[in-house]
Length: 94
Image (tube, rainbow, N blue to C red; front, side, top):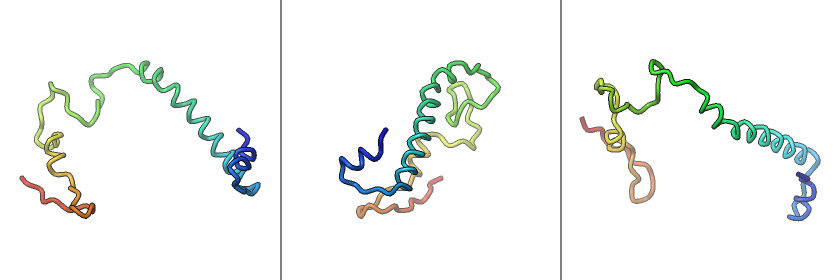
């Protein structure tokens, strides 16, 4: 990707240092996109281990030990937006 041509066509003036920084960022993004493109194959090759942690949600066959909040409880206790769009604290109901 030629940053100078893009900047010129958009009529943006960039210094050589800014162009170098953009090129470095694009190189990082290109590297990351390759990693993310391979993730599905990595994930499908992970062996399932029933003894390992399987995520934050409880599976249907797991009993709730009383210390894990369920989805409904989390949503009920989540902060709410007030009319002026600021976060308002909601008291926790037990």
